[in-house]
Image (cartoon, rainbow, N blue to C red; front, side, top):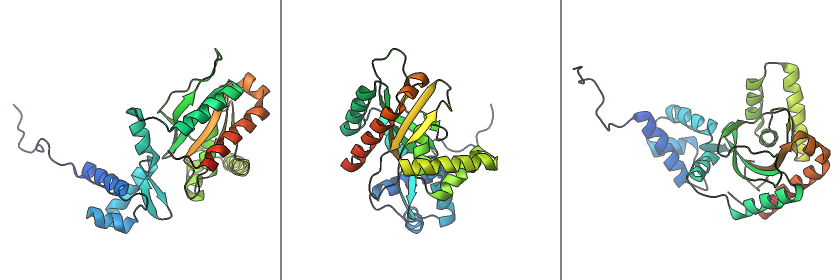
Length: 251
């Protein structure tokens, strides 16, 4: 029988896991003000250089978010809870119902989580052939419509880093940057069959005062049907996003 003299004791503390969980707990407890890196380091009792690495990883995966030098709870925390049964606020779901009914397509509520987008709620139409995307799965930000909304309103350095990761072609980077500038100005993002040839998507960001853009509402459906009424769909999506933005509905 092999020796177990050098094996870690059962139930022994794992330093990395402990620090990551401590960071999450301290930051969540500090809401809504959040913590600066120095404050987080003092609270955990670990060097800033060490804490910074863990914090960056948590931001990248969406469990924390960084705003004006302060760390706050990220959307992945509430998304994880939603998988366990917590529901989207009534105001958001009602907006999805109204949007789906108005255009007879699948209405989607998406959340920015790290460098991914996750669909947290949707309402499907009566159409037999319709978009039925899975809930609570990570999707790339580009080229999906709601991902374009998140990128368009993202802090420039973070957006540029993301674009560099998805393409090495300078011309393609310039094209993406130009499209995102248009999304920022119009508050409408389009996916004209770029991810799946027969599927269109239209989305608009939900803009809450003093907060980063982490949620978007939109519609998805068969390309032929969506393209035929794209102007109507775009107007309806934009109105739904503005309604939620003005109401200040929070997730």
